[in-house]
Image (cartoon, rainbow, N blue to C red):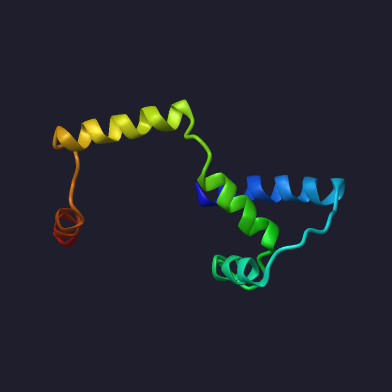
Length: 91
């Protein structure tokens, strides 16, 4: 899942990179806040902003269905604790 997300971002950002560049002005306070949200040093502010936008997007219908299904499975007791899995693996 992580590799798919990284690949999708790479394709999106590489396409965006070749289409348009612009400069925006931000306050020092905002710059410091964006800096705190970077996952790694070479991450651009654009990537940080896109991550923030993505976090605020509506979940897809498929994702909503999968969440509902997972909740139903949990309530029905169709889950296993990490402790139980570790115990089974030690056998």
